[in-house]
Amino acid sequence: MATEVGSIRPAAVEARGWGWRYATRRRWAVQDASFRIAPGERVLLLGASGSGKSTLLHGLAGVLGGDDEGEQTGELTIGGEPAGRARGRAGMVLQDPDSQAILARVGDDVAFGCENLGVPRDEIWPRVRDALEAVGLDVALDRSTSTLSGGQKQRLALAGIIAMRPGLILLDEPTANLDPEGVAEVRDAVGRIVETTGATLVVVEHRLDVWLPLVDRVLVLGSDGSRGAGIIADGSPQAVLRDRGRELAAGGVWVPGIRPAFPPPPSRPPGAALLRAESLVVSRVRGVAVAGPFDLAVNPGEVLGVIGPNGAGKSTLGLTLAGLIPPHSGRVAARAPLSAGVKGDPITWPSRALLTRIGTVFQDPEHQLLTTSVRAELEVGPRALGIPAAEIAARVDELLERLRLAALAEANPYTLSGGEKRRLTVAAMLATRPRVMVLDEPTFGQDSATWAELVAIIARLRDGAGGEDGAAIVAMTHDETVLEALRARVVQVGGSP
Ligand SMILES: Nc1ncnc2c1ncn2[C@@H]1O[C@H](COP(=O)(O)OP(=O)(O)OP(=O)(O)O)[C@@H](O)[C@H]1O
Ligand SMILES: [Mg+2]
Image 1 (spheres, protein in one colour):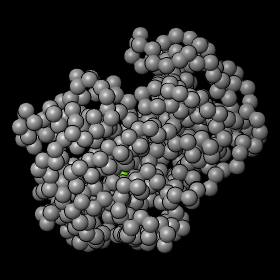
Image 2 (image 1 turned 90 degrees about the vertical axis):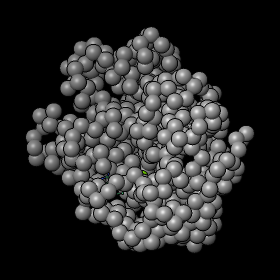
Image 3 (image 1 turned 60 degrees about the vertical axis):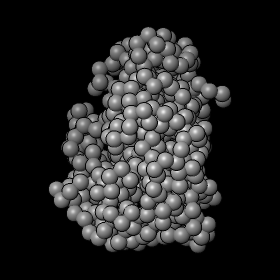
Image 4 (image 1 turned 45 degrees about the vertical axis):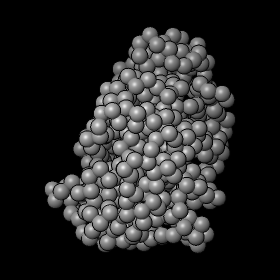
């Protein structure tokens, strides 16, 4: 990278008996964490979904808030100062890229943090260009941020942080939405940045194989399920994985070489198509074609995997198949038994008709949260269908249990961890038992235990139960393991196959 190291001071981090309990929760999100990170160290922070990784990063970034927001124990310092007061020393990329892309244009968005820090104007724009180049986001400075794909937004957020040149870089699942090429690019960009600046790095990611080459230490946060709390493993990646690999894998950490259990293959061949895409060209903005033409059958008893690079139109194809956005040209037609009792193509169906027929899980969970409790969220669909209360309660309890959300039944959906939100939106869709399920990145943000649970649930739906036909499942994903586990038929959108 052509940038100068400038005024970067790599920061030391220390936690002494640090803990945080969100005001709205009885349980502590993090309890009794103690560790020291030397300036310039590169740390991978691991732990099961809900173990408090994001909470710890928020604590370091000084954004957890005051006494109204929660209760704190112990100390958390950056360069010897309480984390909340070390302004500008820590830069964090949030887990949800959407919640970070704030300004309308790419250049302004990347410049925003620098402006806040009072960086001189003539220094800002060279920094912005360097940062965009470093993360491999090759778009015009005046490009609208709202038209970026999920993965591009992740790179944008990273560029904004890099431009600020913080002494401590905090990354919360920075590559979770990226295509494999993007994952390597972003990882390498982060590598170059810590190399040239010497900044301290703490990165959270479930899939550690990507980051192992770059980090020199692994910290593992415990959760209630494993060993109480605090840091349950700390050391070089080699030592931690060698000595504790099996135990950590059992606790939900993705340990390279230890594969989570795969469900059995489909028990019978797929049935006749429920949906057919005919010469389908999809578009997000009216009049602008994104991808196609597709001629596709969506069959019961089968998973159709949609793969392709960031921005290629996977989500757009999914939303179009789901009857939520109109085709640019061509059509999506429904066949019996899916079309029984409704007329026309799914795009013309009333939402109540869609509810039991085609269920959708959006890429960003927050785009589909409707209520103020996890339980209520799961009840919305079945209630709209007029299902009897006892039946609703039975369905909801089962989903809460299976997707490890039972302890969170009364929690506000917006306060869930990233992985918990994903499981909730999948569960909410399952609650109406649609025949066709369109899932955008269904395994996003999952530890290996919750991943295996989700995959097992999808496999069971695919196969049907008690003589019932299996569901037709469409999954847009960068997670090739999930498609392999579900024996998916794969269609490629954009890019080379
Ligand atoms: N704003 C909040 N208010 C209340 N509880 C919260 C809030 N954010 C997180 N929690 C809860 O704190 C616990 C730890 O959440 P956190 O987001 O830190 O987990 P995580 O390890 O990052 O999980 P994931 O891997 O799923 O992202 C979870 O039980 C979560 O539901
Ligand atoms: Mg998290």
